Length: 104
Image (cartoon, rainbow, N blue to C red; front, side):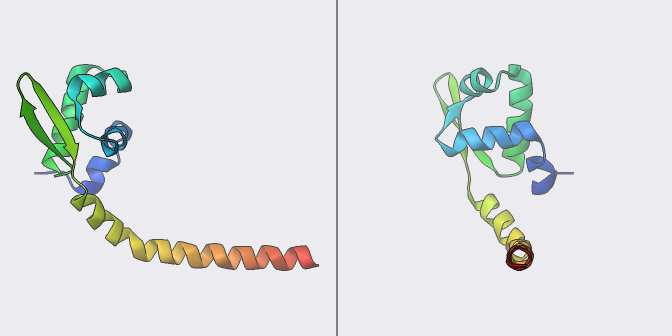
């Protein structure tokens, strides 16, 4: 059974990999160097990201380059949007309340 997008991105190292791939394609060795994690662990995380559709791999001679796919993240963002709106309304209400307290 494939993991859901949420199950994949909840893992902190996977989020770090996604953050690094935002800046451009990277090889496994590049990611290992930056993350300071063992190569088999990075490969395991990349496999999970690939299976979730968050990254694609492009072979180039002896290297495998990983590239971020933004489409699944847009789906996640769309799902979160109504929650953002609710949080924003609550923060606005809190700001109004605090402003009233300052006026007293």
